[in-house]
Length: 501
Image (tube, rainbow, N blue to C red; front, top):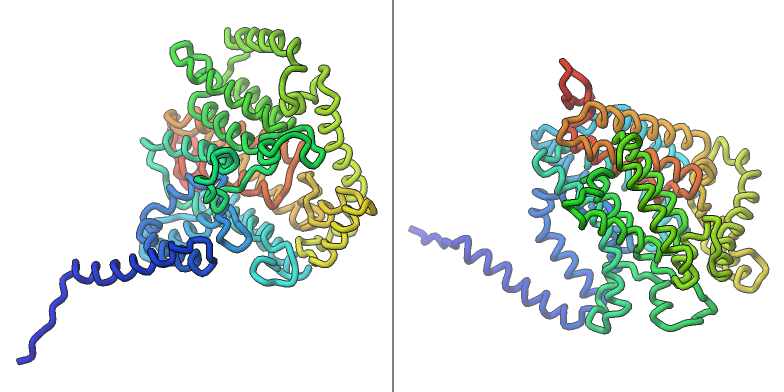
């Protein structure tokens, strides 16, 4: 009788893990080599599959607003775009195994995104394809297509699963507070060599780096801490979503108003005038929806605003130039350097828009797409450096128009406009129904999501917008709402219930 060789499970684990640990340890001896990074990432990816299969939906929510961009991946994509694809893949896998997942809970939103995705794909195929230069392609532009498709995939992944009602506040908090990751890169700038690994995962704020290097670097005077902007947006959205305007000024919770003003201050140091308009719009729409205009809170807001202005205006010239730049849209006296920096940004954008508007009829039927020849881009950059071309020509050629409607109609034509507008209208209807008929425990969150989405639309249309970089904001908000409410809410027997379309 032949002897059977029995191997226990623990021996199998040791037999696999120990050689693997030795290999990874050997590779980490030279961690900056591309081969070492590739093998370590591959090993970690394989080991993380069980975690992703179980927790891909919460991880997608956490990463959606996180400012994390792994440098070892081709093209340095943001983490949310990677997680969107992985989460959709595991959702489809679970669906095939019999799990009850519905990707069309808000059918109008789903259909509009599919239509828009088809328009984008057709435009890409007709205008040079999806070329990713980082993967060896002969053209640029593929990364922008990638972000659009990732935003669409992320919506379906978000909407396919319910967020437990008792964890709604936690998930919403993580969704917005992930923006605080934009502050991690300052450790690499100011923390010394011990944090030199940070740029491999977090994009470094170039302006803060110049500020750390000293004044007058490259002739620049207005140093803007741009990494503060995503963090400020995350803090303010978290506070308004969880507590609303009324909850901000609750006397028993002074930390809320203190954190709110800290977020406003951080945004001022970023130097973006548009962020002030974004925060003001979200604040006052939420103020209106909460019905606070006829209450004492209106007087409190007016009093706080008057006192802040009285304390700020006489000392405005003492504030950093980035703060003065953020406030330069107001009819107040600011430093000429701050005003010149702000007005210069506006001037070159307006000049670019004047050149682009006559081109709209040319791309009305077949959009321009994002495909771009590297030789053409090189020539424009050289011409700009030598003074033969305007600085805006480089942005115009790359498709970064700094204008929402132009960034939609020129790349994708009238078909893209129809698909995108269809999506926005459908999403607003879904968010409005969830705001009106959603569960009372989600009332504050649903109110904020509806208000913030409307503000974001206005911001995209009239202030600053970019289709490929803003679409994930819109799909993330509506996807989160569908996931929170279990679909689209409708009135039933005078009770608020969530049912799928």
